[in-house]
Length: 239
Length: 83
Length: 236
Image (cartoon, rainbow over all chains, first blue to last red; front, top):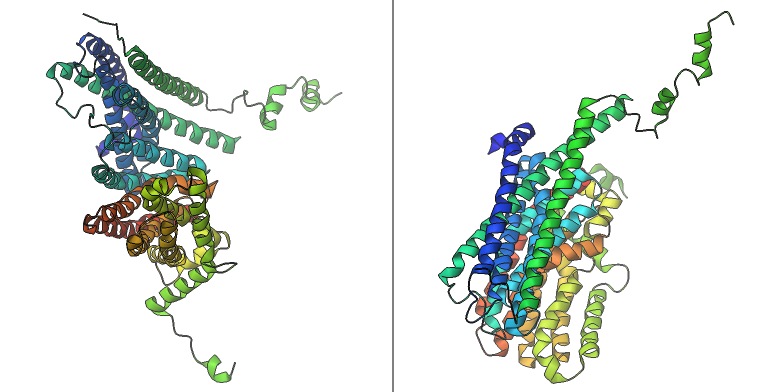
């Protein structure tokens, strides 16, 4: 992995990889969508079960993106590597967008089930808190003018956030045991009918491929951007 | 095989999928556009390392863009010491 | 000053002395300038008064949320004065001196956080039971409110100090600190308010208290190191 920390080697390695990921994402999304709508409706949830196929993958990869952000932050802090900093920054927006999608689709999934647009159950609340973690990270990064300082401060927060996330998740789960949620029908708590596995796993893989493509593309863009900035600075000096 | 009749849940399923598609498409578009933009810029800078005339805000560049015809000092040299 | 004083070499303060000096200085700064600890209490009181004004004074509505609202107010009031925790020293160069002094930057962050706890957390821990009573919490729970507020206040102080260090040199420090730090405040609020809830329904509060203490210890370990890294970043 450390061989990739060299920007040139990273670019060379990800050059052919990224289009493959894009293609894979497109393929899996297409197949997943088709599967999601050809599978029969659930006898309990009706057609709303199809929302699960966009809700859970978004939530899972929203979390995965944060893990990527946190781990990148760790490497950025400990090894002071610019590539790691670029990786952390690149994961933030896609991750936050996925998490927001999870919240939105979760709300739509819940309305027909629970009759309200939001339910404070453990899972949705955890996703909301994850979203807040993203907001804090992005706000911090945006509020510091010096790019290097912003990167380091954000790396500290990213790492602290990653360490805190299990704790916050635990506290939300613990909190949930105190207050029985208004409804006991938590989607997905009853075992998943095996007929839904195919669309679910396909969409899960699709979102994963898409995140990977988005993330790598953003890192590559960031590497180029920094190179441009360096070249421009050099030119301004020589002029 | 594709059963697209979502009643009575159509108002929930379609927005969920629709907004998801929109957001993912927007993310993709943003990533691709940014990537191309900086790739182009980098290629431009690496191919032509001299200060670009496009950067006309800088007086040094503007001066060299004027050329000898409009600059009397250069014109003097072109005319020759006799005159 | 007599000749004898001038002849004697001043002894270096040593770790304990340096700690005490910094702690006293921080408390002076926190409590000086009008009101002292009462300012945080005043803010807390305002929040407590606004709830019934916003939601109606019916004890049947207020009672169930009394503990929770008290904790919400605690979290918000703990955000006060965080912005200036490092910023003042950064502006007048005191932070550089502290960094060069006897204490490591990690120790400085720790002491500043402790001072924050004493300056803000302690007064709030005394005010919280009164506020909870006013909102309709049963009187038997007031000692628990004070205890959990005291412990939770330490958690808020440590995590808050970390947030203040991260936001050093950033724009809109106060709001930024809040956005960064409030998600991290969730565990102590959940455990603290949860303890009150448990006690209210005659269940054991031990686990909740233990979790609260665990969080505080965790924050006490992380905040000095992460905070020092953040301060160094902002300085350099």
